[in-house]
Image (cartoon, rainbow, N blue to C red; front, side):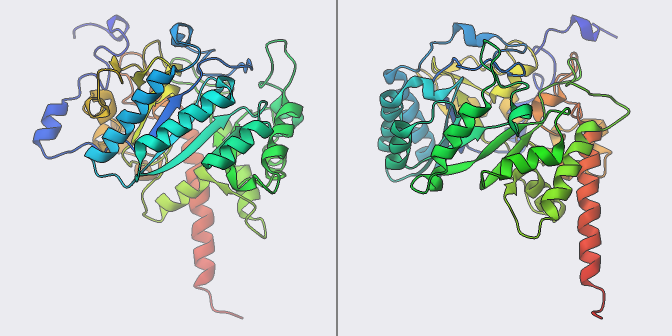
Length: 408
């Protein structure tokens, strides 16, 4: 039988470690170039959210990262992105300034970064975004973002009670009032065009409809609902293999959103599920089988996979590559990257036997981890996703059937 699962070190012989990328290339498969680059401008945070995958979960690599990305590293990152776009003939790319809390880098350092990126990309279309906890949004940052067309996403977990359950200062003080003030500055008429949306992590103790309505109060163009990070070894809060609390929660939000007389906002997860049910391709790594074309650069210049993998185990996101010596093309042929671009060939047997596999796509990759087998598993949220997708499909089928009924 060989060694048991307990003898296998994470990442060594677990999926996707054994993936034969050379065999894939010989069979005609070609990697999809990166189109989204997450650049960690600052590695520390001014909040102490207790569910944070960067600071509170398995991988504590942030401790060894420089606090702020050096200007020389920024220049190299910008050059590498431009090189990648040029070599693959990309008409445009997206760069998200991230952290930690990216605004801790300061206005002038952020200005240096966005200026360097725009200069390096030249005629290549560059969509620049920043994802922030919102407490540092002020007039100086907003003027900078307006000058350089930087779109701003803010993390907000609902109303004051819901938000302050987890998103607190290290002293324990909640941050809702500070975040609200930041969003209101961003939503002022002269800056509203920069407001890209809100990101909300689900908390089962918060009422789903009340949470949704607290978010749409700010009239965001988009809302992203995120499932708390967990996996088969460390399940998320309230998880059970016999009930579907997260699927129930999201279904309640869907019903409120879908039944509104006018569309109040877009909810990315729901829109993507509807697209997939209609036979379209996914535009999100959280759902569906489309190739994932995202890469992360840490403040040191280290090139990594999506950083939510830090919730799985120490080193799960690492690649051992660096912008000072490696191109982004070198990252594309790593097994860990290829595994997220080969669709059905990366699915587990359980997923392949599911009637919703082309919609679900196995769920968010970090949520599939199980020691011994790695990431070739269904999501730990498998039952919840099935509950949500089935519910949306049923609502769509009922609506379509109404269209075929004769008018009275």
